[in-house]
Length: 159
Image (tube, helix red, strand yellow):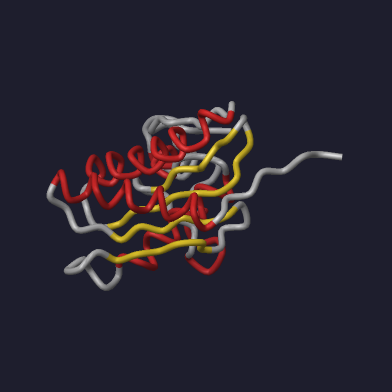
């Protein structure tokens, strides 16, 4: 039998707040979504003034990162990004009724080497979305670290 960790609402809220704080610091209005290991939202917020399309895009990114266990931008990173034309997963973004996101802004949440969810951000450019996403992961690392858990805090995550 395998022991499974699950994100809880308080974890997701802390991650969301850290991403919002970083977004304020860098001057970008983000939509942020934290999902469980099945890709379903635990917490989502669209900052005041952020684009109305942002929540769905953030959810798509978080869903993809959690479900496919990799940072979403890795699908299109040259030369071997699997979703690039001519590569093995070209067209994968049409999977799941177009919910599969293959661009920057989605990161799997990895605790003790297990993907337990995802975080997705929409509203900034790739660098801004990444900074806010890393802030969310760092907040979880600080929350769980004292209990002996390791959280991956990096942009290029692939499990």
